[in-house]
Image 1 (cartoon, rainbow, N blue to C red):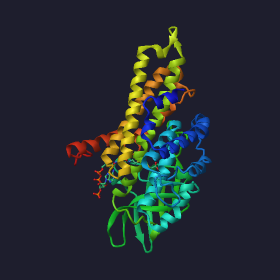
Image 2: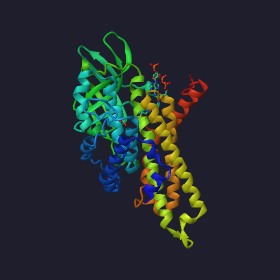
Image 3: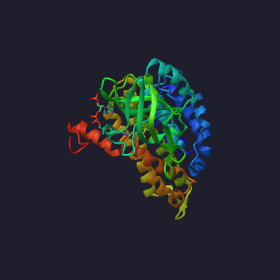
Image 4: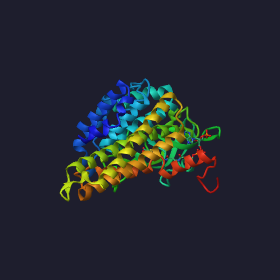
Length: 396
Ligand code: TGC
């Protein structure tokens, strides 16, 4: 069993608690029994299998790192392990858990009023309500400071106008956390978050078609045309971009683990094939060039998981910094893509077919590489950390 070999050679489990291994096993069973049997068809048919949402909630995976409000209150490493196992099946399902738990629920949990938390979090934890998180706009995602979506006060109401793009789950969501440049009744302005029930007049979400990546999940264009909200729809605890960035940190952390799940799946496929496929009268796994590739893939996988574990332990101590998360997000996705490319080459022609998960993972990882901060954004975050000089724009 290639899966067992990849897991046991390095004995990562020795560094986990019993509780963490319990979460890992539960997520592995979910991925194996509920996602893997259907994912190739769903990817091919662009089908989001909504009925799995309640099952993810029942398993405790939604907002699982949050305390109270029906959430599991699990540790950061346990959450990371769940992300890894779900993404070993498909990045779209880890993305679902990220958007729901790390973005939408975290925004309400970190910045919401007690009423907002009581109203939304318990039903989001069970999957009864789906959430989305609207930050990125049609003009781009790397510079949220340039957002043009506005919120203005009109008496006792807020009025939102603007557009968002690449918003996961928006067309099936019950609630959207929308970030806008808000002008309050006293004339003060700041980026603020708004809790928008998606049945509010003026809110429209349209799935983006033509995706060759993340085909089993949903990303949308959102328009906000004179969306009127009660005055208490604003998240009281967030003013400025640190509000949405504090949620992106959570989602980026999940990706550090999750991308290694996609990598493991590719490595397992290549390893299984290397031991059975014969060329020139021997299994290709007997060839030094193939063994060299497998060894390099394995080394990067193990390094990536150990880095994720290190960041998880820092997060549990409360000392994890955005720059450290950038190290992990940049490394995990970059190396997972490299592992996927190498796996495809070992699988040769069959590697481009859906008989193996490798091209699906590779296509998905191209999205993961871009969202939640592109490779280049994370390089620049680290460049600033190392030099003390921000290189985000020519003006800085
Ligand atoms: P700057 O404008 O100077 O700083 C703004 C404020 O934010 C603070 N901050 C952070 N706080 C917490 N965590 C972080 N990671 C933070 N990064 C910045 C910063 O301290 C400042 O606070 P304050 O109190 O002084 O106002 O911004 P910057 O120069 O620090 O950052 C520039 C840059 C390029 C790093 C940042 O803009 C960035 O990270 N850009 C990438 C954004 C991104 O990841 N976009 C993709 C989002 S993915 C997405 O939208 C999909 S989710 C939707 C869905 O799938 O449903």
